[in-house]
Image (cartoon, rainbow, N blue to C red; front, top):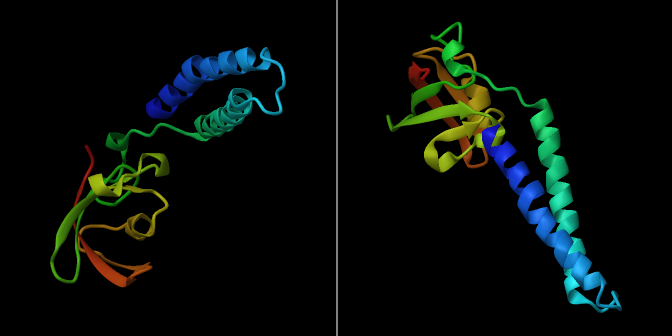
Length: 147
């Protein structure tokens, strides 16, 4: 939520005013049909306005969740850090986060990702089968932790 708010504030307070100034200056130069600064500025302003609208919609429906307040710490729910092992006993730790926070390289998977959907509600020792584009895989839940 904080990252979305910071991006929104940056776009609205810094980037958009700079583009508006460029467009105003370019509009005062005369013929707008062949004015690259004006055409590019208008295009950039539409992109910024579209992103601002998207961010506003996301922030309106988002709800900040404290994972440490989870009632049942023996099951996988939002915010859980889960240690899983595949068929070859290769272990990895993933954390279930909001889709906007997902970063697979850092082990944070979005709430609606196939693996996250499969892990929801699982307990230690449960085996979950996940259909991925690369094929079906099984993971066993080895540990659950809420920070």
